[in-house]
Amino acid sequence: MEVNGDGAGNSTRPRKVIDEENSAVEIPETAHQISSDSWFQVGFVLTTGINSAYVLGYSGTIMVPLGWIPGVVGLIIATAISLYANSLIAELHEFGGRRHIRYRDLAGFIYGRKAYSLTWGLQYVNLFMINTGYIILAGSALKAVYALFSDDHVMKLPYFIAISGFVCALFAMSIPHLSALRLWLGVSTVFSLIYIIVAFVLSVKDGIEAPARDYSIPGTTRSKIFTTIGASANLVFAFNTGMLPEIQATIKQPVVSNMMKSLYFQFSAGVLPMYAVTFIGYWAYGSSTSSYLLSSVNGPVWVKALANISAFLQTVIALHVIHSRLVLSENLLLSLYLLLLFDCCANIHLLLVDICKPNV
Image (cartoon, rainbow, N blue to C red; front, side, top):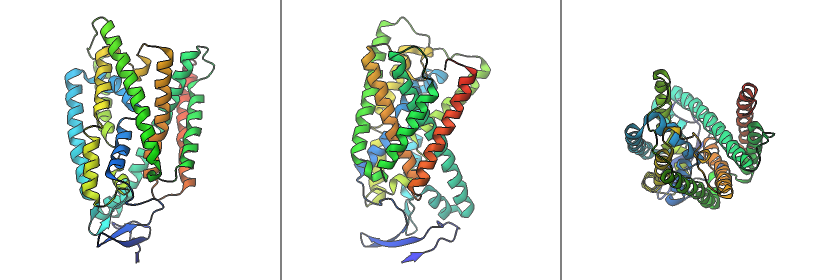
């Protein structure tokens, strides 16, 4: 049975009704697999997002602008609020006899056509910013490896960003949908553990050997206001993907209780590595902590190279987790066009910086 969307709370794509555990549930048509993954696999998908290479920047972008007490309290409060908010969204996934496999479908079903369109636009803005950031981050990790072995500055950051975008496009072509990431989620976890453990151990070593650190918040009053706003935004971003219904679409029945298990896994075992590297990095270097922690640590060149390569490879996988879910209803060609757009925008930004600062 097919039902056409009416544009007011419904998707504009055809829908089908299937029987899941003896109940008729209406599910939008999609090229992706629905109800195929265990809660544990989905938990690893969520954990991959939390422990992406972005965690290497939280010491400098959250703790430095906020300081010890506001930073620690802010992270704990953000964790609790994010778990509560995600739980509310998860409970609405199967609502009104329908599986709302896209955020915009859920918004449209509850609030109408305008909310559907607004959510669709905001999700793609979210996609654009996060994935452009991922490509820049991957390029920065590659450049850090290059800088460990060469100081001639011949290869500039935009070149590494172009390489990163190309690798991301190749990976996107090899993975048709999120459920096909099964093996890669384990690989991603290994990469995450490598750069987190390296950053943690080298930071502890530097912190023990270093003199007393300055933990005061740097900058003028005006700059402190802006950095505090930025740090607060990072607190929200750190725990949320903005596409929970798309991820929940892949989980097996019962979708709500299984998703809650995944969320509890994400916000317990999943956040511990992030907390550890964030707090230790700030403890070791104080207000001088870099926005990319591996730039602050001291240690064997091969160890730092391994950590940066792991950060690069994990970023490629993490980007695909975000990208594939938001284009849940789209085709591969559009996905590749979007990746090229992200890469071009990242390079334009860095080329402008390169013009102003030739040694970037």
